[in-house]
Image (cartoon, rainbow, N blue to C red):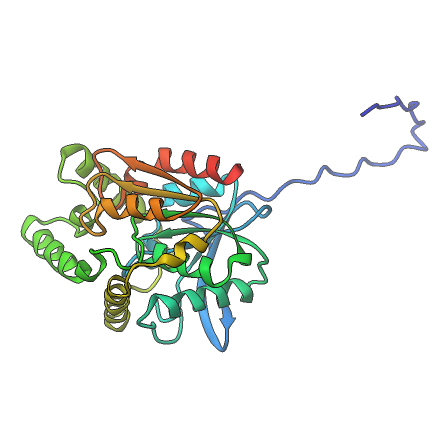
Length: 303
């Protein structure tokens, strides 16, 4: 671009320079307001973080997870470059309605939410149960999806999801006996390094003090347990070969909730997949290794 110098104006002819537009400061996880959007007559709660341009990245959460269970380090790290949208699906947290008891119905609700926001194309980050929802969404409406990140999840028909309630109950017992949070046992390995990461993760979750979300209800938990069992019992999901979008599969090397081997099988069934297994970590590997996860995810989404 060439620039031609202008002559210096006389004081009478000069006009005030227009102010330089200032880009709005990206909203962070801890300050993002909880909003609602009408989805077929039901209010869905959601939050938006980060940039306002580019393909939106929709986050789909784990069993019992609500808006406040997303790691601020992950959300804000991704929000440095992307428009990040967190959502409570039907019946979850602050959203209205009753939680459905199948992954297929949850995926239909996720599609309806995306359309209610007027989004044409999105990227998806699905964690655990949310990863199963993301798989179904991509098969149901492939034209809505550009790229997908699947963390700590499994393909349909793989063993593990049906045992989630038993794993949760065992973690609750251990947490009560040891005076710890259940996520110490659900998301992290028993090693000192991983347990220290659990402490740091839980401290980040506690930073938000205003406009907190509502915890998952017994109805939501029961419906999600049923959905997880149906997912395991549904048989091998050969439909994954129909997902032609690029997929990044992520897990820890010691996942006690959704066995790590499921991530290998998932990546093997997808025609265009990358697999990343993080060391000394469990189901919450994306939170323990949040800096690495954010860097890999943003690199993956840029390509």
